[in-house]
Length: 307
Length: 319
Image (cartoon, rainbow over all chains, first blue to last red; front, side):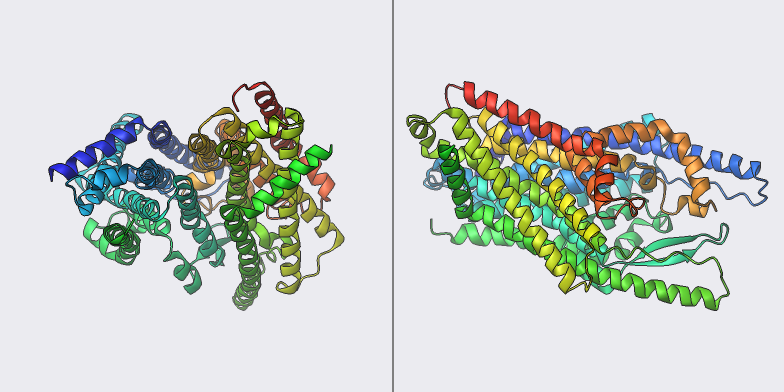
């Protein structure tokens, strides 16, 4: 265990000395803080918009006034879902892309393995180090978010909502770790850290943008008639093809789970955490599988590698 | 001039021998085809869906029927704009980095400059060769788009559509050229290859993802719950009246988006391809005039960064 911790601690030190990683991590923290401000400001905008609508309808002589929109506290933090999905995954890639390829390029991997250390200890150490850095970043984000949320929005969250938020951060951790594991795997397989980095960027683009867009393009847009205004609106509707395409994107699965946990979907906003997790079971499995696959792939590859 | 042509030709040959560059290029071409195929299928499905909805509404006795969805054949390339914005930019970044890092790695900068060749000829050759390659890539993608649109979509493009496509690929070239020049400049400036690449990627992330993402999260349409105005029973005109009250917020959001070349590219492309409504009756020239700010947003940084690259390359002692 001592050796694993030594390697983990070296990984953490290396991460905090890496200017590029620090820049991306800082960007992630700034954006997560900004997201609370934007969320609070826009929720206030929603209330103002409602007041304006009431005034407008009254001035036009309307007798039927719509009910005030219900605001769920966690939905104020909803922007964090996108920032974790996009920037969080990049942070994990910056952390893991040169874990092994750099050691290989500098010849330190042979040196390390010539010491009394097993291969599984080395990979476990790197994994723990990466996990610690990611967990640290997310804990800082969670604390900042809770603090700013209370200060800026003036709202408080109850225990159930705090549990939802904590579970969301657990999924965020797993999502980021999946990208870290993928980077570790690519780094193991690649002889060159530049190649590993660019390949991971392509994978990231595919998983985070290309697949979701392909799925989006296959949704049906049905016409819905509004009862009050009698206007027609287009509503997206999942199709079998769009749902099948989405399976291949952990980003989509993470966003689906995140939206439910952070009360973005009003119909699910007051369900118990257990019911919510049960409802999202399929998305959770689709999110878990790629990470586990990468973990086994990395172990298998490193333990059996000849050179 | 002949020295420049020799260097330009060598740049193109080197890039075409770079497996990673070729892989990204093939990926971009495949995604172009996939986006056209899926876009075409989607348009056909939307028309069928529309017809079914109309039948249903008519059977209910409704007279206020929604308009026919846009059948603009170019709009099926909507996803393609995003692929150029992401993969096209990455392709250009790899080219820019490779143009300098390969010479550094092999120590050939010093060797080339020990021959009877000036520094400006060398950088002109590199710029010329790589920009020509980017132009050829755009030309190839344009050809693939037109062939697949005609063959699969079953649409015949009018002369106006073709001109719009040409303008779109010109904008796409400018966008890719910008990331090539950023990458070239940063790699010339920073001596370590990996560090330069990581720096350019961070710049790319900020301009292509973070600024648009901030703009997107500040967008009233995204912040208010889906169908908020509709649920309040407002029509489009009333909705606009309310949204107008948040002018400052919109100005700030727009200001953040204006900082992003990706947004400039997206705005001009969506107008040219007819993805964004309101430009249906304009010619490509008129759209270019209307979107001059977006065009300038792509052109001006290209010129400034090219000049800075010259400056760094001509004055730097250790290349």
